[in-house]
Length: 396
Image 1 (tube, rainbow, N blue to C red):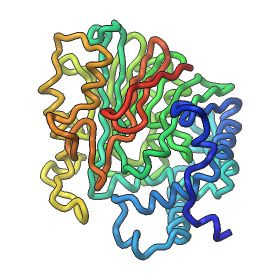
Image 2 (cartoon, rainbow, N blue to C red):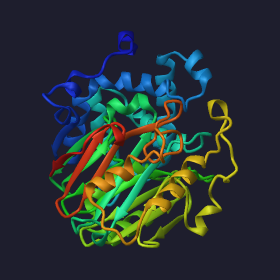
Image 3 (cartoon, rainbow, N blue to C red):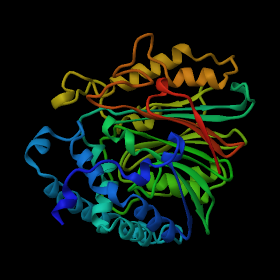
């Protein structure tokens, strides 16, 4: 069994196909359990390479890189997964009448791993919220009146450590019960970081730097995003759905529907507030904008530690927001090329720690740029930095 801990190359099933788009798109169908098991089987040989890359991420303490061998790291991840699973189980076992534990068990069977190890990967999003670093994502929700297409659009950049760029993929989910959806995700995740469903509801996820956590029954936020896509028709229904669901850590969920309704739910571990359109544009980086939430946020003057020493944790957020507010024109109708330019923006430079299109191997870079279209229930995506490619389209 120890041979499985050796680092392997990317899965041939992930890399096959005549073009980049085919390599990164996969489809699951059937019951939720059948879809989960199918996903695990497809990416089974990626599990240990992903954990090896997770261990070597810059956000992980350097002593772990040097002193903890991969088998021990895998065991520790399973140990953390077991703790989080025990805490979250009451919500997972009966979430709006659905047993998410059964779905996680099916995913685990597909991967040939314990459910604790799978949940350990999911728990990383809660664990990482307490680390002294700055990743960052960008969400821009355009109204119909702000686009040349005359349709609303949600633009999203996903920023994460560069070693994970090869794993970003799009899942076409076709459940027997629930709405079909296109979801930007990672192989071991039942959840999503962005997506659009057959009703035209679009969702994206940003990280928040909250000081409070919820250690009781809760749902990981990526799983919550996917449940919203499975079961919600429009923004107001999604907002109610989210407000009623406990989450373990801070995040932002941006919502847009075909009618042009827009909202952001700002969340910490114990508080939630809804933000609507301000000054014609709904934008989210990684900083709370609502006054009730700022009291639960890491202070603006806080600095990172280790390799992040000298960086203020909010530097990236403040720079992006200031830049965007400086270049966005509330009177203009934006083309897709204009929006691509927003998502590729380097503030006159070549891209760094504090730009919308992020270039910073030492912390995180933009791994994918996504445009979500509620009217056509489709998305366009660049795998990699927004400035490096052209958007390719996927339809339900």
